[in-house]
Length: 180
Image (cartoon, rainbow, N blue to C red; front, top):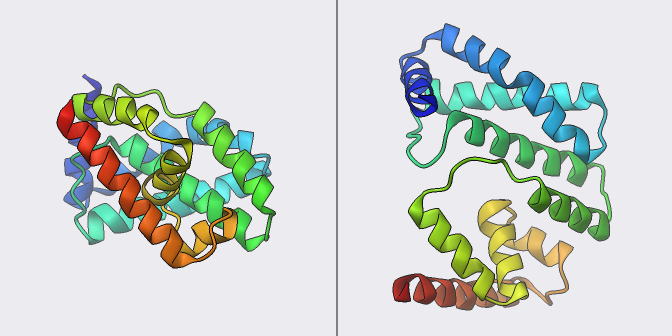
């Protein structure tokens, strides 16, 4: 039922139906605000981030016709929100340890959606690789940090070190997924 509702909203968005955007805005606002309260930012800042995230949803789906095949609108919206929160903190120049604390909290409160078989396999194999590999892959692929940002918030020497370590870790993870 939820998947069908998501698909209908998605199709309405792609077709430029503004009522779908309004439905999404109302449907997820309270949950979004509650979810992002844990980042210890003011409610007004969270609401601003929500507004910005809704604008991005509009741009991605209505203007750019982004294909939403691997997640729900809610997951996509909350992912945009997470990136905006991290950018919010980066502009305030918080310390590396504060960013790491946010990442830990973020892992503890992941959205509870039913993962696909591939996502389950990936999660299982992510647990099998080293902590440093898991961390760099999560920062790059899940948190959308750039290589430069990863150098700043970790103990890696330079961008080339991050790139080569990420490449080795990804190769290891792909190998594990193929074995399973």
